[in-house]
Length: 88
Image 1 (cartoon, rainbow, N blue to C red):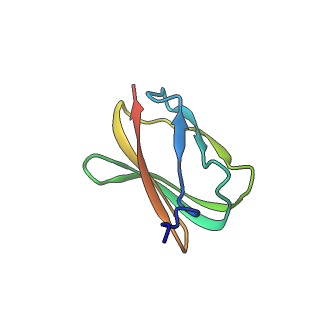
Image 2: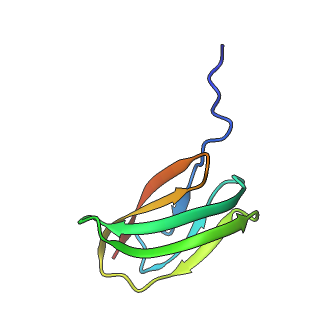
Image 3: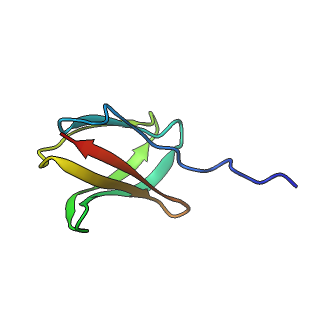
């Protein structure tokens, strides 16, 4: 039986490292209602946004963040995906 990887969220952030302006590409994963949070390495949430019906699969962000490594988490009812972005 083949494993079902059909609905994994694969999230690409570019550019990475970034100056705070970046695009998140969800690679055609469509969701109706998801939450995106960005946390620093201490676990503090520095940014959060509700993403409603992302169908074009890319979101642009222009954030004023201190330099460092951040975790970007997107979760909907079915899936959760975390990736890192480096702010320089």
